[in-house]
Image (cartoon, rainbow, N blue to C red):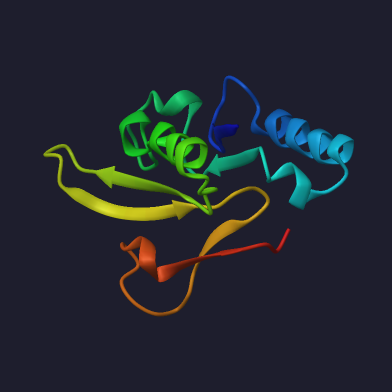
Length: 125
């Protein structure tokens, strides 16, 4: 199962989603066992379902279905979701990985800050 939620959601508080995920971890017994079947991705700057276009990712900038299909059909668990921010002409402004909660993407200090390959998933909460 893949669940994703925008950190900028003003309709459904993001903390309720992270609390749900953490409750599942407690019931299952560990993060490792939970992530065998369930990954949560918290998307920075995304509002409710990516409905608003702004500085963050809108609904067209993320594709969790393809990642889920690959997990189910090819047994390749996602280590991130790729997000793409486009301008009004459809040109790519930047890309970022969205890491499985509780990890987050952090610039690794090398490369172009608009390129997802310049970011690593780290857990520092």
